[in-house]
Image (cartoon, rainbow, N blue to C red; front, side, top):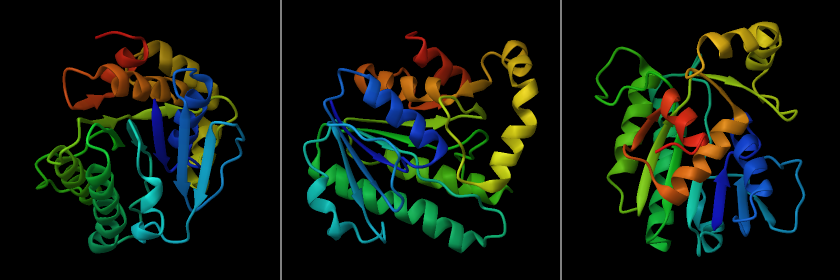
Length: 224
């Protein structure tokens, strides 16, 4: 399987990158982003671009792919809806359209978030925008498309969030994270589980296009 990862320097992106590197069934990994990743491997190719909206500058790389793991995301804190929509909906859609045009048998896996609003009419701005993005992706002519909605994420394997506030939050939460996992086993996911689940649905699919935390947990464990 040949895959492309967008957002591989972020917390979830680092997780799926590590799982792809560990998986012998993944033959080629293309990483496209603004920031370099720390991993080096013979099957990993990294393309750094200044502006991800400039899709023509890297479009020729987007061929011969079986799966896309789209892990780009930003916090909506302090942003207007127009600005957040531009960097979330517009960017995702323009890249996805290029991928769909060049790879007819591609599986697109998008990292959304818990409480995303599929109706696009709710009160929460980020949830509306994420919902619109999910809906746009599900209308595209991919072989399959899956929307991942993780909630609480526990970083493993030395992975750290790029967002300072999140990093501080994980430091505070670290002592109680094992308790949360025991109390809510289907709600707290690790970066490793999310990466495993992405590979699983890219290979074998999933009964529903939207995967909540409990579905991601089940997919990572190899359950149907």
